[in-house]
Length: 93
Image (tube, rainbow, N blue to C red; front, top):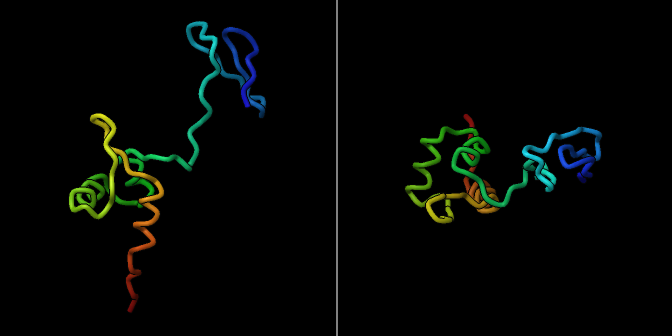
């Protein structure tokens, strides 16, 4: 939770203070969690520990679903998790 100290300063519950730029009267958004609803392509690639190029190939082949919001392309986090669980593990020799 964030508490405004003044027009130019806010404080988190853990005691961290955050300067508010330009005298903004709104508290800043909390840090992004690991449980985002939609992922950018680079973030989805990082979650899979693959390159962006490989992520784009998976999307282009229709293996990983995407959502388009205007010109932005996003990967639903839950769809990415379902895709991972649907993959067959590779047997080691």
